[in-house]
Image 1 (cartoon, rainbow, N blue to C red):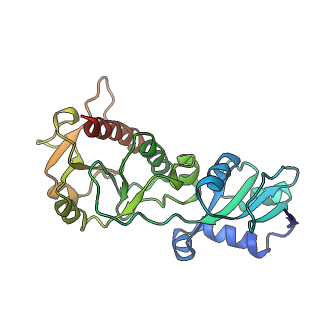
Image 2: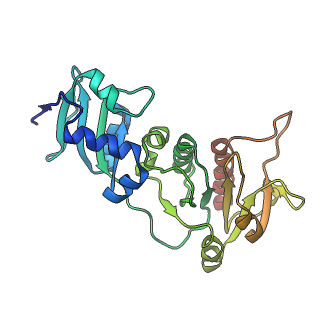
Image 3: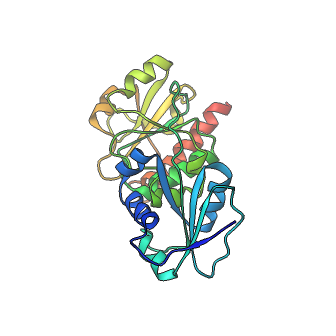
Length: 254
């Protein structure tokens, strides 16, 4: 395996990494992503198509498949290129996983406008852990293949099926698949989560700031709440999603 040395931030490969990290539109256009960290690289080498690996000088690169470009750069240069607050000494370029294109499966969890990439990545990880049939994203969600979401997913982004469905189309997709649309919301008609059948359902969780959109609230067959004790009024999106994924798993196994 031949390894090149890069010393300039103007290098075309490094410039490509900067553009991809900074733009979800660019990642979609190119069909590529940039990951940061050795653990994530290990997962990508097993479950994705890695194109290039760029590590800080002094780091030992793992064996790479034939055709993967390998480069070493000064540590300060790599830190300057990375968009992460705590770079881990290696960046890699890989093909973006293809979106799952199939009928909407029962037991899917929908993220409606969840903008925090850490939350989106954490939900992908929880989705894989609890066997989610799909994680569905409406418009306004953070890119699941952005650097922060990738790190939060701990590699699950390469394995957990992801679908993107406009919120206007979601009720119709549910009807086509014979599924109930259930949303998390605090309303006069809300029921405790454990009282609502979820076996043939799709469950929606909204962003922490705005909650589920009015469009989906109006189209839902049921509104649910997660019962809580003490003075806690709400959970963040990732924590609430993990509870919902656990309940969806229990419903499948019932």
